[in-house]
Length: 290
Image 1 (tube, rainbow, N blue to C red):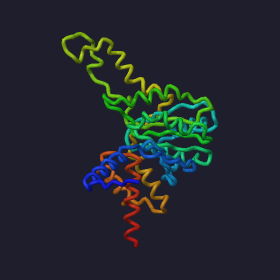
Image 2: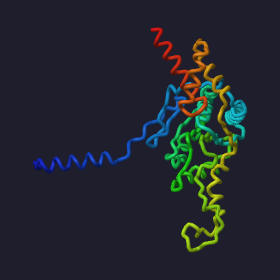
Image 3: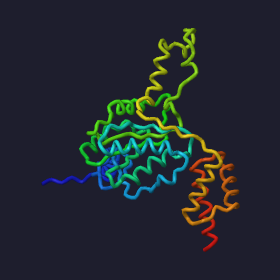
Image 4: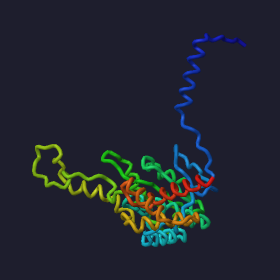
């Protein structure tokens, strides 16, 4: 059999071409390990999270009404009863994300699973539905800090899924999303301005009200809205004291004064700021005791 000796430069060129081809090919999809309690949708795959951070509902203060609503809806979902997709909106640091994550801590042993997805991957929602179709577990697909800019088309994928996601007992898929905005798409002043000047490009929309309806309709697809509000000083201090007492540390006058300085430096009173203060205070005291 005849053999051919290729020139060295040709071998190098072929090697470069093969490496580029390998990099351009999609990565092989790994088999999903459904024994995990939580997942992250990344690179078109469900990445298992075996030890998600445990969040406790009892640590969330001042949002009892919101907790009662989301617990009832989630229990309906787990029992195969009709349930709504939920949009949680309001001030930052008030417990929107924590309340969703705490559901996994409470209901994991009842078959609840959590899938976290980024806003830019919402067009993959139908793929996620296919992957978990027929699974015995119940899945909350969770999108944090949901909002869209004027040019973003991903919201159409979310609208499509929400339109078809009326929970009927046969479904194992529901969407919970958090946002600092009640309306998830930006609205502009000119969209609410009467159409009187046809010579100006931004006023050439013949049916401006329909454009507005298109933008606010996404929020309407969520059957349940939960609003979260800024907290007062008393509630902020109560949360800080709660976290210190969990570590058997007194909420002294010194700790109280430092907690107030902590929130003033951040320009907000919130559960997140109280928790961050508690970590700083507890850690510094324990460090000094070493």
